Length: 337
Image 1 (cartoon, rainbow, N blue to C red):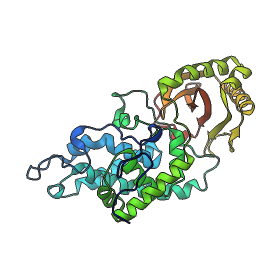
Image 2 (tube, helix red, strand yellow; image 1 turned 180 degrees about the vertical axis):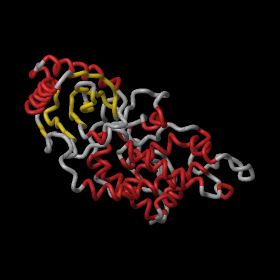
Image 3 (tube, rainbow, N blue to C red; image 1 turned 60 degrees about the horizontal axis):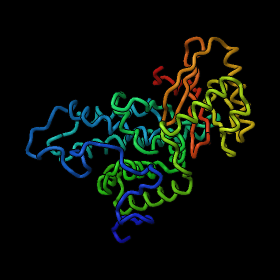
Image 4 (cartoon, rainbow, N blue to C red; image 1 turned 30 degrees about the horizontal axis):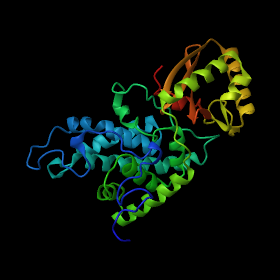
């Protein structure tokens, strides 16, 4: 190890990878830059609740990126706040970095436990839907994860392939721009080890990452045609919008019925979608509402007033490349309709 950050093709030493719009930093306030104290060291420590609330948007974002679960992220923040209250804050020079350290350690503990549970998960596992269509109005700092591709279901599934430590390091460095010293303190490893973990994580992500997912604005025209074709039962119209390697993933978690294996190919996916719509109509009164979840156009399907699923459409290069259907009721409790 030379002690210098690894070099990525086309990037200067020590600069986070910016490829495909993913690895740019999530927008944050200029006076909260990593490694920079938020206040003078001789100032009286502010109220712990106020300090935590100030940084809560960032902290929620870190926890969600590591865990892929709104509910787990909220639990991590609650536990982290209790730990923060017991800290001697007169010795804390940079509350932002210190709080990120607490949240990361709590999230890592949850992630390691969740990883074992996910090995026994029934059918495909999908991240919990996160509404991302109300910039500046979203509660709990959800707007902090709207920038770039890191919040999309596709990228969260890529991050699932990383070890817990790699995922935490990658998120802190490549999404949120923390320096290696801060990350080392957060994950309890040396800076040299953190650099190596990040290098391996970046290589793994690059190997699995496809073309960038279209932004909601770019995806809207295709999504509208897709939804219109599905609503009218137009099989050919659906197939014309589906990429040759399109995949449908359904997450019922073994709690409710859902396809337990990926369904691939335009014909199979189109007919599956129309079959699911017809089945829903037989179960009761169907109400469909549109939105944006995880940076992708989505529909929320209610049957007799009860949320049955959130289905998001991934669009790349003008075609639907994936359909993600979350039906596990445990993952729908935080969804607002």
